[in-house]
Length: 206
Ligand code: MN
Image (cartoon, rainbow, N blue to C red):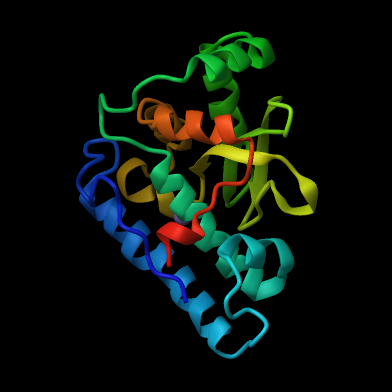
């Protein structure tokens, strides 16, 4: 059984970027529903019991995958954001890799926002690293994650489902992504980059 993780900044901590109504719907309705649905599936499937969330995401399909991946993706998304002015900076190692692979942090931001805008329909825009530290941007649809089938490890993600921004931004996905970038938790991203592995979120959701 998995639980809805605590938000490090509460439901009002990201205001004015994401206001309480937006956060309440997204966190307490959407994210919670994915976790509740996953827990219902686990109750009736002995093979899922005791598995880590990452293992379920990597080994399931259909409705179980959709709910498990959405449970994982949202926790990763929440942890990747910080209140205004509290996001810190990329580690020296990460800053160097960004310069090498994207030219500059501003070019990475432009490509991240563009990748999110161009993600058709519902999905996610991810910054990922391979095991050697090479950075890439990956756009996924619906619940899909980059790290199935030996894909790269995510270090940052933005939710581009309309439910993530429609209360505060209506259809202005680019504006939401610009503001998202100003609220990245660079400490979290740098930790993920240092590990080069898929983050263990099971421990914050157990
Ligand atoms: Mn969402």
